[in-house]
Structure formats: structure tokens, C-alpha cells
Amino acid sequence: MRWPRTVLGGALSALVLPVLSACGPADAQVQQNILVDPAGGTKPGYTTVARLADVPFAALGPGSSVLVRGGSYGDVVFVGSRGTAAAPVTVAAEPGTQPRLSNSVVFENAVYVTVTGLTVQGAVNSGFIIRRGSSHVTVAGSTVSRSGLGIWIGDGAGAGHRISGNTLADNQTHGVAVDVINAPREDPSYILDNTVTGNGIHGMEINGSGYVVEGNRVSGNGVGMSGTSGIHVYAKDAAQDAGDRNTIRYNIVTGQKETTGQDGNGIQIDQWCDGNVVAFNVAADNDGAGINLFDAGSNTVVNNTTYGNMRDSGGKHVYRGEIVLASDYTKQVDRTSNNRVLNNIAYATRPNVAAIVVEATTTDNNNAIGPNFLGSAVGAPLYRWDTQATGDGASLPLNGQGPDLTGTPAFRDPANPMTGGLALTAPPARAGIPLGATRDIAGQAYAPGEAPTFGAYRSP
Image 1 (cartoon, one colour):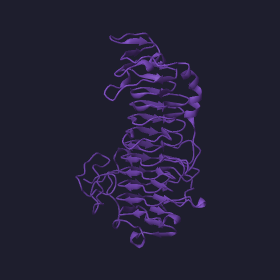
Image 2: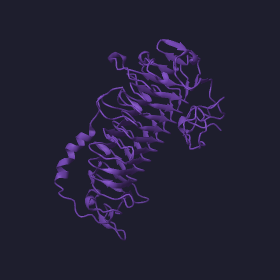
Image 3: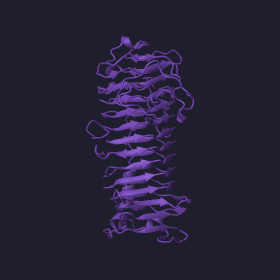
Image 4: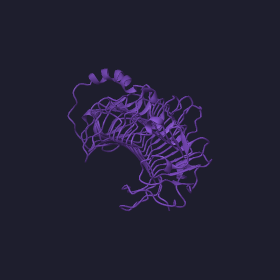
């Protein structure tokens, strides 16, 4: 649902633009090896500087290496290096050391730069800022905690980024935020295998198009604001070109918090966000729905496992379901349409929570629902369709590709979804619809044309 965006990137721009304008033209770029060591140590083949901010990033040519020794670094760092795909500029913690930064790393006009192994703690703004013409920036194996935001992509940034294997924890706003930056189909940006936990608003705010959000572990976010989701795909309004053609796959999202509103979703495709794929994710034990489509159209939601969602800690939710398709009927938006929802497992464990909820204005919008594997541990109706509650999907105009399977999936250890507890120990009675899947969330392969198991995991 809607909420006012924080604009930390803009605040940072105001802070650092005078410094950048004073830097003057970039020096000629040549390959260099730089050691950063506050103690003034040396390393053969490297030139030593005392501060990370002293590195002449704008003068570093392709193949340059910056090694950062353990120590504390307090300055804002600007990275304007330009590497190549074959010879990126690398900035890395020296093996066996732990550099700790208390301010932001800002990529501006940077191309093919890879940063690994840095820890940012307590930055007022984002730990890492990617902006103003920067493309093909990789931030990997790093940590941002107790900062304004984890990693931010905005303000004229380019595409081709890789945000991979980072820990983004306990930040004031989001773990990752994309701020109206779209990636072309031929050069997507990737957000891969990150741990995103305890952040104040969304775990991930994807206010952009063309992102692949894959393999992340997202838990316990939304601690500081109502109206949030673990992974949130977003457009500000109907006119904004954002929130389309993203791929959200192979993620596990748990424990999103909501005590005063109707969100707290695991994954939400929000208003005016179209053509996204949500596939092979696990969403469990969230305060809201596991997966929520809200005034979003032509999205594909396939082979996800949702379990035990809709904790509804604040008692505010109207649409109580594992998977929810709904609209802002108060404003007569009515655009949750032409979505495909199939091959999912939706298993409710709480009273009065349905496996699938379709809000009244959405029931006639050409959504195709099914087949899915649906169940309830407490005997609640499997569907809430407008005002109708039923366990018989065949009685509803689902427009699906086949009948649902109902019952109780053979989960391995549902109390531990983060460690594969929602994998299956026995196959369902039948398979889902073949859609070209190549593997499941655990990396188990599907043969070409093979009908997949319902849910995120291939059955044994």
C-alpha cells in the first residue's frame, strides 16, 4: 500500500555536492595498486595512503586494485573509477582484516567497479549510494547496519549492478532501495543472496523496473513504520514509469511486521506495477499476506510456497489470506487484472485466514487462478471470493488451467522456513502445470517440459 517515501539520497546529495564540484576534472586514468592503512604500513607493489578518502579514485584505470586494511574510516568516500568488464576496478578488504566505515561510500560516474568486504555502521545516510551515471557497480560480501539505509540506487544511476551476498541489518529505513531507476531488458540489475533483516521500513523497496531479486533471505523488517512489506515492488502513481517487469524469485521472506495497518506482507506487487514475475519464493509467518497483488496487472505468481501468514498482530487486516488479490475500492482504482496465479502452495494455519482472497472489485478482472495446492490447518474456508467463503474452488469462476489440489502438504519442518523447513518429504498427489521452470528454490533441476511440483520446492 501507499506510504510517503523517505528521500535519503536527496539529503546526501545536498551534503556532498559542494565537495564534488570542488574536485575539478578527473586525472588521466592509469592502472594503480593502492593500499589503505591508517597505520602507514606497506605492501610490495602498492602505494600507501592513510584514508580511504585519499584514494585517487577518479584516476584509477581498468584493473586497478585498492586494498583496505582493518581500521576505522570516518569520511564520506567518493568512487568515480571507470573499469571495464574484463578489468574492473576492485576495492576490497585485505584478507584477514575488517575495515569499518562510519560514513557513506558514494559511486558517482563509476563504471565496472567491485567493492567487497567492507562494513558500514552508523552512517547517517545510506551505507552505499549508487547514482549519477554509475553502471555495472558490484557491492558484495559487505555489511551495512544501524545506518539511514543499506544500499540505495537512484539519482540518475545506470544499470547492470550486482548487489550480492551482503548483510543489511537494523537500518532506519530500507535494507535495499531502488529509487526510480529502470534497467533495460538487455542489461538488468541483480539483487542476489543478501541477508536483509530488522530494517525499519521495507526489507527491499523496488521502485524501478528490470531488476532480478533472487535468493535473498528477508526477515523481521518493518519495525519502524506501518505499511511495509519484506519485498515491495512500487510505483508512486499511474504516471510513474516504475515497478514493471521485475523478477522476484527464490527468496525466503518471513516475519514482516505490521501492528497498526493492513500490510506486513511478505511480497507485495503494489499499485500500477505490471508484468512482474513472482516465482519459487517462500513467504511464511508474516503479519500480512504471504503474497499480495494490489491494483497490479499482468503479473505471474507461480510455484511459491506461502505458509502461516496473516499473523495480523494489530488486528487491522480486512483481506485475510495467504495470497491476496485486492484493490483500493475506496478510490475505485480496480486494476488488479490479467494476473496468473498457479502452481503455488498456500497453506493457512490461523483461524479465519483463507488460502486465497479475491476482493469484490477484483473478481471479474480476468485473473487466472489455479491450479494451486490449498489447505488450512484449522478448517478455514480455502477461498474468500467477494463475500463468499468456500472450500470448493470449482464453484468459482477462477479462469484457471485446472482444478486445485487440496489437503495438507508434507512439509519437512514448517517451524523453520529459513532453513528449508517448507521443503516436501513426499510428493503431492499430482504435479502442477509445465511453465518452463528450470530449477526449484533449492537448486534441484527440472527437465525441459517437466511438470513442476506445486510450491517452491521440488518433491523428493
